[in-house]
Image (cartoon, rainbow, N blue to C red):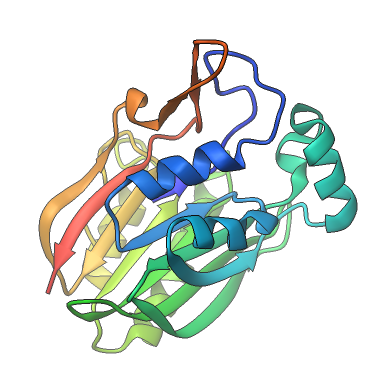
Length: 243
């Protein structure tokens, strides 16, 4: 699971689109399924092409006038920052494919938050994934959104295994109750770590490598200035599951 570049989250200030760098980093990692949050919607086709994958996306917040927002983002990314518009994206590396796709609006204000769910056919199994970005700075609202998303995702998944992932904006050390409910009501666990807000929760699969955050240098790329660009202010979370 990856977050797309946050403006200013760099060792050197770079006021230009970072699609090529992000696509290269994403392609270099070993994955079958990638969950992206806060991704510019217009990046979807390019990311899928560069990573030899297909997938689905759902628009989230700040998508007011995409044509104008895109032009401003190309001209001055730091000026528009996250107001370029956001989306949640699920990418599936070939020969995996999406069999079914659904979406659920979790909040409309103060920003639109949505969960997307997909049933996937992968190389070794069929499984479902759900991807969301919960509201920031309001733990009670975020908890309600995550629990509502989990209930819908589990219901839609039926007997298939499921992974619920994304930016929950909840830290288990500070807000343990939602994670206890996710485990007890839906069989989803365990969180990435006590202070993490990005999580991959699984039900119905064996955990080979439990969710962990990559080191900062693993989300950095070289720049012509000879300094390093850190592509996201969130550490990517990776995990390995089998049936």
